[in-house]
Length: 98
Image 1 (tube, rainbow, N blue to C red):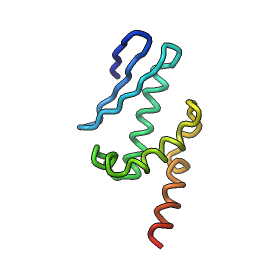
Image 2 (cartoon, rainbow, N blue to C red):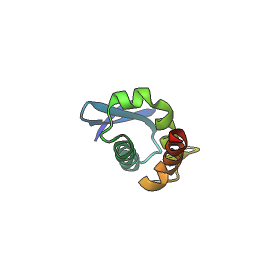
Image 3 (cartoon, one colour):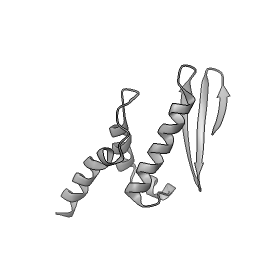
């Protein structure tokens, strides 16, 4: 886990192969919970994209936003279950195929 502090903001970042995920947090945030959220986020991306890469994120940014919207609402974590997070995307993919 890596942190960089600058004034009243902490940057928490984690590297997965060539992919870096960076989140800015305040002093009141729990670093470990945000770190776990990052890990869960990457696991969900891996499950959806089958070994996520930065190109997957770049070319499917709308899908990544849907995943984040399912996980976080109004700054609070509302869902961590991978199947529930990916359910709306599965429905969208099913509609796109037909």
